[in-house]
Image (cartoon, rainbow, N blue to C red; front, side, top):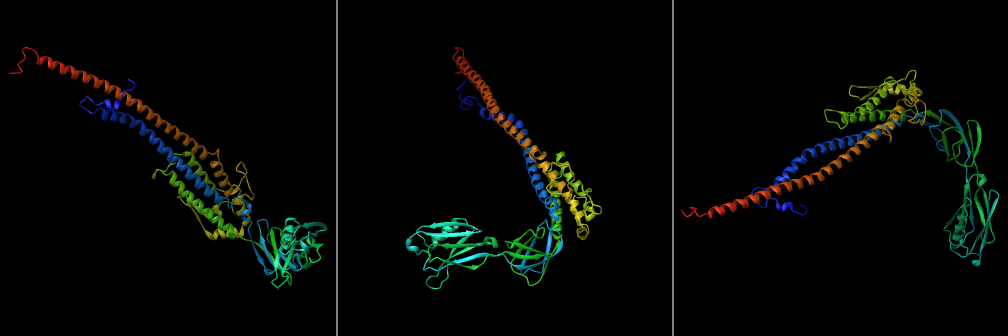
Length: 457
């Protein structure tokens, strides 16, 4: 029956709307299978969204743990400096507490030399003949030849030679011959230089001599070629800006304020994460991960790390509760700020161990204790890694959804065939009805033409 227009053929001779009947039958057959698959799609998409939200929340919690998981995170120092007018001092995490004496005798300076003056920076020199310039730096001489020389061309040649000098044009504004070429070297006596040329009118004089910085720290004399010095006091960078009239003091002391702020941030992040986890797993609000027992286990592991004894306990500070941090029945951390301050002031080293196990950069693959923050970070990294539960579960759900989408396409294709079958059946029925109607009309006509018919009575 290929080539038959079922849609237009249906209903042509029947007294009822066979086209609508076919559409209703197909829709009835489609509805059951399609709704079942769509429910699966909705559930799967909800779980995928829930896992995505869980990963985002865990990432935020991980960021909070990373504020505390390395011992260096607690190495913050305050600097008290009586020589602020001569020395700026900054302490890094590798510094150590202590008091240092300092006296600055001289600063490191760069040599500055300036040329004789000319009427402009583009004035042709040496009758437009080439000029040779000899520059000696640290005993090594280099000769530069400048064609069609003027001050601009000479400055460009010196800068492009990469000799450690910077050549620049200055205009003194003093009438004629106000344009000069200034050469600036690098700081330190070893960076002194000399310059000469074969053009007699181009001469140079030194207006500042290259010198080293000289200072005395903790009774020891030091000479450095730079005013920024980071190899005298451990973990401290000194920036010399002037000399001192007397011996000054730079004191480095432990600063617990940053560590306290990071601990408070970690508590806030954990509380926010706990609330979000409850929304994701709660039955009362149809949380998308309410039936995911593995994710519930992950949440319980996070909670246990926070409430149990640290994997690297101290003698006095062995858990969060020992420094004034507890958890309520809703899973929210509560804190006593006074007890936190006392722990930081009296047992700072143990607090460092509590959170970081006194180590840095521990891998998630290590089985060694990592402290509370380190254990939290490592657990999150394991479950969110490409081979972790959350990543593999999300990939599996995405694959299942792709299968459901294919099932819906298969239903569409099957319904096309079902519709064609119904169309053929109704068309066959309609053909029979038409044949019967034709037979009926033929019989009526035959009866009416019989000789004994009384139709005229």
